[in-house]
Amino acid sequence: MRLTQLSANQQGFKTVKFRPTGATLIVGTQSREGQTYNGVGKSLIVQLIHFCLGSNKNAAFEEKIPQWEFQLAFEIAGASHKVARNTSKQNVVILDDKEVSVTEYRKWLGERAFTLPDDVGLSFRSLIPKFLRRGQKEYNEPLETGEATDYQKILHASFLLGLEVALVKRKCDLRTESTRIDVLKKNFQTDDLLKDFYTGGKDTAIHLAFLDQRIRKLNQDKDQFVLAENYHEMREAADALAERIGDETNRMFLVQGAVDNIDKSLREQPDLPVERVRQLYGELAQTFKPESLRRLQEVSDFHRRMLSNRIARLSGEKLRLLEQVARLQADLSSMRSELDKKIQTLGEARALDHYTALVAQIADLQVQADKLRDYQELSREYTDREAQLQLRLSEEVIATNVYLDETKVERERHLSVFNDYVAKFYPNRIAGISVQNNVGENKIRFDISVHVEGDSSDGINEVRIFCYDLALMTLRLGHKIGFLFHDSRLFANMDIRQRATLFKLAHQVTSTLDTQYIATINPDFISSMEREFTPEEFKRAIGDNVVLELKDDSPAGKLLGLDVDMKYD
Image (cartoon, rainbow, N blue to C red):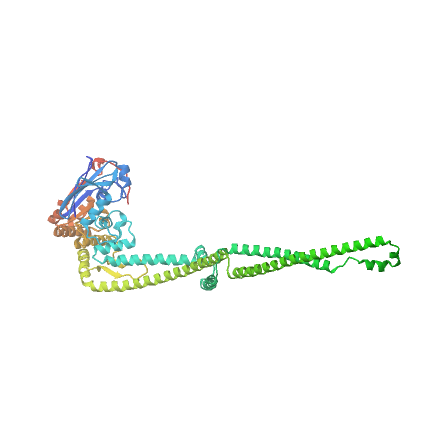
């Protein structure tokens, strides 16, 4: 992929035409201290290229320069393309005269500019900043990429250095899961509400054993439970029969009492014969006239007849009552036998509500036991999962060591490109890119160090960044990016000889590889290093490659052709 031209729909914009091979230099003066878009626009070019290559929405563009449309012409995979993006309609781009979403456009770019592995989190937008640095932060460290996390920085660097990114991704995933499990386990064990929900504040093992024993006993009772669905009807019938037996017993007692009264009446003889009257009254009887005595005899006979009739009547009533007593006794005997059977049945069978209550009690205890068992199971699962993850992490350490040993020769051959570039600046300094297996409890698989002896010094750090970026473009591992763009801030701290060496090397490498080195630079940086070149070298590396001069003498001389106040890092 190489850049061809950056233009806009506004006449005041200074079109940037990029040289197809070698260096492309945009020269401009700095209008004031600090880096702002209201300078001549050198750094703005980087932002605009990112904008045309699908960066996130730029609110400053929408606010300060609405309805501006920027176009970027570029080559990729041997074909020419043109993209346009409007500052007031940033969610879409016009790619080769066809409107597509920014998401679709990014995917399109990624498929053509990079050979991206699946499911590792790499994309065109995450990788292109390594060839198109922007902002002060990205000029502090070679691996720095905007807002990327430490893991993402290593992932990006590993891919562009030809390392196995699956190892990087797996450690991150395992550590992420391990951290998640560890947090869940600690929360599970220490959260009072959670623990109380599962255990009720009880010792799980002891209380679970008690509940299991209680449940077994109740289940035995349930299994032996003879259920009578008509238990209540049976009980009501037994109660009614018992009441009837009581009534019949009382009735029998009344009848038997009547028989006893008859017997008593039969035993009594209230009548007196005439002879007994005579004896009682003796001589008094002699005074009675014979006619009177005859009447007394008649009366006595009458009473004897009455008594005889009464005895016959009572005897007959007695016989009837005795028959009734016999019937009542038989009925009572039958009813008592039936009641005994009902009572026995009720003793063997219990009511449905009793059974339901027993089942409900078992269910309630089972819920408690299940919660305790779930608590134990979750705790065990967390522990098991934690151990499994630690085992896999250990296995990954071994696998990474094996990988680094097996690829050592090829890796050193690739990384030696960086060493060769640094040697152009510092022949006697130790330099190199080292890759070590990070076995710490973190998400980082490789410790990647881009080192130049004394690189904490100003100027040396900038050389380190330049050589690293140039090595990535040179190696072309997993990508087809054929350009490298640096802002003028990269050269600010370099001494004159280092700066001259940088442009000599950039011209040499890009000419050989048929790639582009694009840079914005201040004119004093150029003039101060001219004496480090022969006239012919200066012409080839610098003079012939200045494609645009931006001036701060008036708004018309600036990139946009106007003054705009849009601050950035």
